[in-house]
Length: 173
Ligand SMILES: [Zn+2]
Ligand SMILES: [Zn+2]
Ligand SMILES: [Zn+2]
Image 1: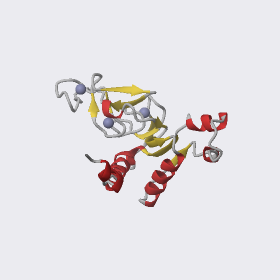
Image 2: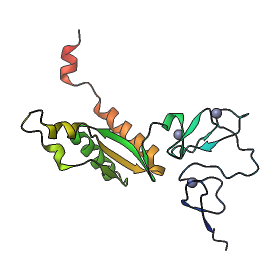
Image 3: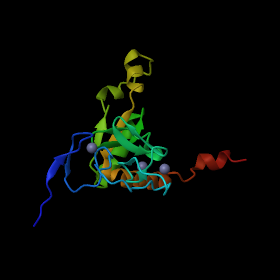
Image 4: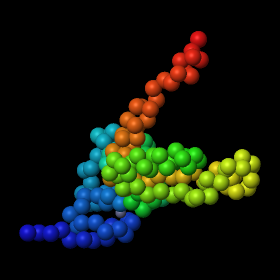
């Protein structure tokens, strides 16, 4: 049995198997011979692979953000090491709900800025404390390979919630 050898990606230094065709951590392609084509432009050579959706992209339809390759759709997703931000809100309660929802659906979740300071609003004043809490959204990260699943689960969850409530009905002309 040939167990794959581990080598370091020469772009990001993360560990990959020696038979990898691309680096799942940074989206670099290892094809020496070329002949890997953009999924959107079959005549243009791919420059990398989006680490979130694994789409092959050329220099025109993707780019490296902080050394990690992302397609245009995902270029705005905040990526930290092997985690991708699936949700953020300055309402810490919203982020807490999203985090709990994902956890109860079996996702690995990492929270950022879930600082208890965020709850210090009961005075209602515009203190520097509440303002600094507002400027830092509470972020919810999931492992990059689970990003698309988590995003879909959240979209489904939200669409279930988005049914018109009584107030909307009353305000209708
Ligand atoms: Zn890499
Ligand atoms: Zn993508
Ligand atoms: Zn392209």
